[in-house]
Image (cartoon, rainbow over all chains, first blue to last red; front, side):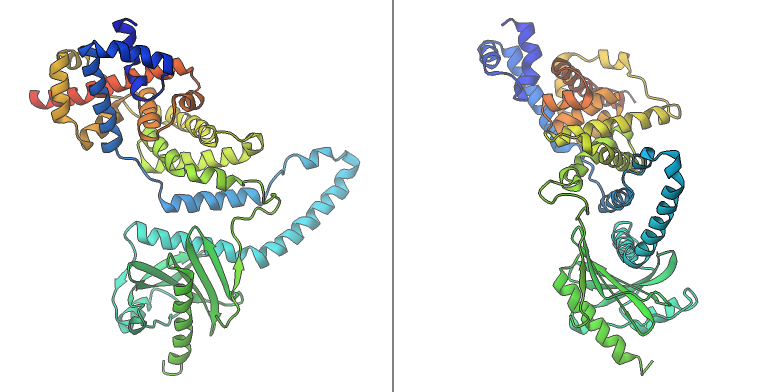
Length: 259
Length: 189
């Protein structure tokens, strides 16, 4: 192997991309060529530097949530274009009637079953975003009597704010957020290094079912009580989040007569 | 919990056989690699996120045609196409900085190596890599950051392995030269 050939193969040699025969020939040349040896060292240094020092951009958790939501939307309307092409014109009318009926049934089904996961996904996205863009709180306070009045004038209802500090879930603040196209109160609690967003809004005619929803390690617990809907979202373990929810449910009952 | 919580199961595709890997299981693990390439090619967060999402949508539509094998290379090929389509659209709005031949040629080989050692750090590397033309930038990201093999890169970029080899060599050469040129400019000013 001559020098020019060898010099061209130093990169692939470093990258482990040469076959054994070429490898051996190159090593033979390398042994007697200080110039190639030096170049190989330089190549090695450069690549090491690139992989050590160049930032590897990481996708935000919110992007993942966004993609999963978009994929789910895609899945719920698959194969729209292919099946109806097989209908002959005479079938078109009855086909249309059937389609309308199916859509009506699906729509009815959507309203009863799809609403909750969508809201849950949105709540997870809100939770992630609140941690990400450094906008966890609009009002930072561990005092429920500071957080509750803060919402007055910003919302058309007054959320109950309870402090669970003594139980290991201190209240740390509140924030205005948007969920299901309406303004909602987000009350923030802390558990060690984790945060819980508790979303509260009037349930009106669409009270939440009690439910648990999991997505990528985030948990959402939803329920309705005394005319209010509650969604608690956190990356905390399911067990702890349920414990938290249990305490919130107890406290909202207890404090109501005194309000 | 006394209120009888029920579980809404997430990743179950209604029509899909559970023994077959589903789309998200196969492709979501490549999210970071995809985002990294998109971010380096498009050079801003928003465009990179849009490109990655678009790539997932396209891949999902084409999933029926995926016959197993190297899912990462398959997906990165789609992502790369999306990125280049976006770059074409964005191209008209920006003016690329020309490769300054004068500065790059005034430095001798050994000086270059020395300057390179002193100068290279995370910031200069970042700047230098951003300055490279996309064809060089992408090959460095794919190989030196994402660890794709030459063969995979050949698939993603759509070029023969021999070209991967020579292009990567040129890309590394240019990157080295950019770092040194940055140093030279600094000492001139």
